Length: 219
Image (tube, rainbow, N blue to C red; front, side, top):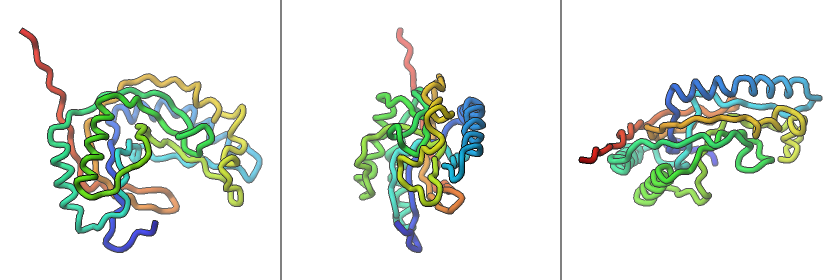
């Protein structure tokens, strides 16, 4: 959809903490080198892997689509109310896989959809309904997009996107990559997405810090 003047291409997302972001960078570095080498050594034309910059890693809670820019202040206030008493969320990394299916061109980190994360997602859906915004119809699965496999020119069929990066190549090693870490998600952001040939650039419109969970002692 083409963006009109005075419109934002908005979504609600959760960024990673800096320490988790750095840990994930370090964990993926060897596999990333293998992927890039496999792509460079493959017969041409070959699929290319476009890696998402770590500063753009996020979990999308809701894609709002095109919204009028003059509604931004109203939407921010409604979102602030929806998040006013929300605690931070703890979850775990589940896997690194092709997402949402085995032949998808997207490589993603999947996170465990625990009760706390699903409850927060439900609250965001309620906010969208109250604000008269687009509501996601697809089932929610928390994930972070790491890379996209791009088919060479003239080879746009999804099955061909795998190209020489399937079979015994490093792509096949994704499921063997063991990542085990608890993740704390303590911020929710309203973002504006700017599309370009080099990839998406995100502008933070509002940043909400979720409160720390309260613990009561007995006795």
